[in-house]
Amino acid sequence: MEEKILKISSLTLAVLIVTALVALRPFSEINKREEKREQMSELQMLAYYTEQAEEEEDINFRQQLRVEIPSGMTEQDISIENNYVRQLITIEIPGVEKDYFTSHPLLGRSNHINDLYMESGVIEITMDAVYEVKTTVTGSYLYVDFLTPQQVYDKVVVIDAGHGGGAPGAIKQEIMEKDINLAIVLQLKELLDKNDRNIGVYYTRTEDTNPTFEQRAQLGGKSEANLYISVHSNSTTDGQMSSYNGTEVMYDELKEEEGLSSKHLAQICLEEITGAMGSKNNGLTHGNGIYIIRNNEVPTALIEVGFMTNQEELNKLNSPEYQKQAAQGIYNAIMRALDEGY
Image (cartoon, rainbow, N blue to C red; front, top):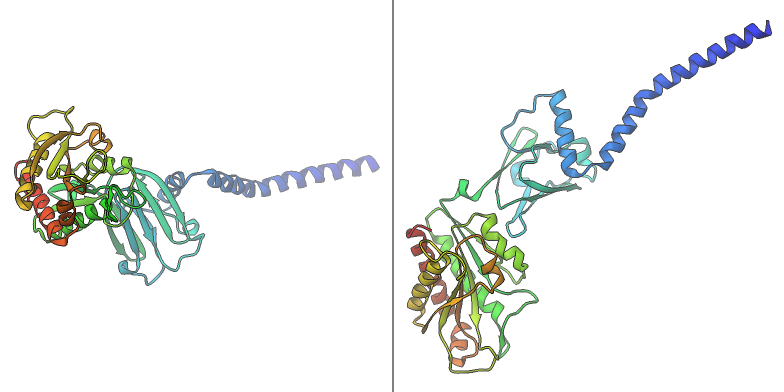
């Protein structure tokens, strides 16, 4: 009798264990999925959630990305910043908690996205090149698409204001080269902003910042620009004040010099700028030793507007009137170069 009871007890226990294991299996699978998700990068999460959503609902949308937004939110409530120099696009959705994107995952394709970060209503997207952002809000969803500059503009130009931030360039009588360069570029920006031609202009800086040489040089290729112009102010080799003055333009002498080349662009810049400013024409100078010229993928001209080591020219370079003339000359050069086929 005791043996029979023992067998029944053992059988009952075995059944209970099996039942418990079967019951716990879904929880075990859930835990495994959670662990897997925790080990994924944000880009892998994008692919994972998109795959899950495709199995559960129809998510056929033409735009690249889709994210659910809080009820009542409009497109005007959402902030988008596009840092072209870093190829970093930041989307901010206000009033969103830290874990929002876990319950409202970002869906779509990772094409041309190098990195992705999401937290507390902020989506940071690092692209593989320069893109313009196109967004629409339909119902409770924000749709995001990325367009190449060539899909938006007829021509693309990159403008670089030399130096900046902790790299002041030449300093004479407390006047810093970085400030002269930026002042000329901001005057140029005013002219380009008023232009009615469909030209996309990307600036390495419009403030007192100092992008790296790599960031400056790669912007031409990343935007597939038609031309690249860098604005600088010159000084003598020893930095001493002298009578030497005038404008010169640097180009890449190791690249093809025929046709729409770096050299021809430099020649256009030299002619137009000296014409607008009335400065001395010091000719063209080899520039392959300069990082942003050597490492640029598009025709590049580096303009040395004038000499800070010449007192008369320093006074001119520091004046808004002369800066405006320099900007007009660069503007004329850009328009002429584009008209010639760049």
